[in-house]
Image (cartoon, rainbow, N blue to C red; front, side, top):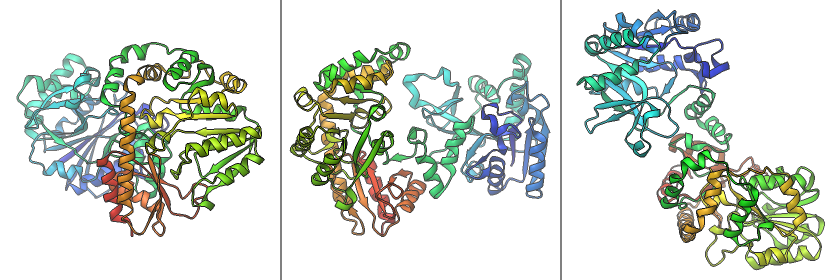
Length: 602
C-alpha cells in the first residue's frame, strides 16, 4: 500500500496563510498538515508517499526531505500547469505510480484523526471513500449510499434536495483504491473525460460518471465519530484549530468565539443559555415554508416591529422597542446614559461594559453567597442615578419575587431614581413564582423603570437575535430610537414575532419542561458531596466545585466528552474560586453531563 497526496493547488482562499507555502504546510493546533499526514501514514504502515506538487512545490519538497528523510520513500511529481488546471490533472500525472500498488489518496487540505488511514487500510473494502454524515456546515461533494455501503451517486451541493438532506454523506476526500480499479476502470474513464472536457475539473467528477455507468462497487467507509475537517479558508482554519487542539487551549479557542457552536457538531453546549423545548417543529415548519419570501424581502421598519411587540406583550407600541437581541438595547441604553449606575455583580457583563459614560457602583453579591440583597439594592438606589437588576440573576439563578421587585421600583420612584429590570430568564421560574412586568399597568405606573427582556434565550431562537425594552419614559425611549437603525430586525425575526401567538401555549409548556428538568438535574447533582449546587429559578445552575479545579474540569469535559460548560474562575467576584455554570438542556444531554461529571469530581 502506498499513498498519494494532491498538493499542487494555490489555496487562494486561505490568503495570507498560503502566501509563501502550499496548503499542507499550514499549521493546525501546532502541527503542520503535512507532518500530521506523514505520521498517519507511518501509523498505517505505509512506506511510500507520492506527492503531486505545484504552487510553492520546492518549499514543500525541501521541508519534507529535511524533516522526514529516511522515514519512507518520497516521490515528487510536478504539475507545472497548477495555475490553469485542477486536481483531475494532478491525479492523472501520477498515473505511472498509481499502477504500481494499491493507493490511499488524500488531499492536502484535510485534517483528520491520525489513526484514520490505518483503519481504512485494514477495512474489508478494496475500494472505498471516507464519508461523514452530511451536516449544514459542510461544502463540496456528497454521496448517496445503499444499505450495503455501496456509493450510488456523487452529488454537488447545489444539486442536493433540501427535503432529503438526511440521505447524504459528505466525501472526506480520502480514498482507498486497488491497482486493478485504478488501472482497468478509473484511469481509462479519467483520460476519456479529460479529452472531452479538459483538465480544469476534479477527479471526483470521474467517480460520479463511474457511479452512473458501471458496477464499480465503490464502498463508503463511514467516519462515525472520527474527527476531521476540510480547510478551505481562514474560518475553516480557525475551526480546525479548535477541533484538534487539546485541553485548556481548545477550551479557550472555542469560548473566544462567543457562539457559532453549530460548526462544532459534536459539542454539547452547556455554556450558552437557550430553551431546548421551544420552538417546536410546527413553528419551525411554518417559518421554513416562508423562507424564500423572508430571504428576498426587506423587513418592516421599527414602528411595525413595535406594533408586533405590543400585540405579544400588551405594552403600548409607544412604550416598547424591539432590538437585535437584548444586547443591542442594553448597548443603546448605555450609550445615552449619564451619571452613576449600580449593578449587582457578578452578573451579565453588558451592564458594566455598555455603560461607559457612567460611574459603576458594584453591589457585591458574593458577600451574600451570590444572592441579591434588597437592603444592599436600596442602599445603592439612594446613592446612584440608575440601578440594574437581572432577575433571575445570572449566573446564580437567584430570584426576587414580584412583591420584592415592586417594592424596589416604588422605593426608587419615591427618590426620583431609575431602575433597569432585566427579566430575560423569568419565564423559567417555577410557575408559582413566574411573573412579568411587561404590561401597560406596571409600565404606566412606574415611568422610572426600564424593563429589558431577551427573546433569544427564553424563546429558543438565539439565531434570530430578538430582545425588548419597555418604559413609559417617552423622552428616554425617543433618545434610544435615535441611536438605532430603522431596519435593525431581519424578516425572519419579524415573521417570528407575527406568528408566535399561535404557539403561546406550547411556549408555556416548554417553560414548565425546563422547570421540571432543572429540578431533576439539581437533585442529581446534589448527590455529589464534593460540590455545592445553588438553587435556581433560571435555565442554568451555579455550582461551587470547591476543591475541584473549575478550569481543568471545563477543559476535560470538552476534550474527552465534547461538553462545553461555563468556567467562572476568570469572572469578577469569582477569582481564585472554582465555580461553573451549566445550562439546562434536554434530558438526554443532561444525563450525559451528569455521567461525565461523575468521572471527574472528587
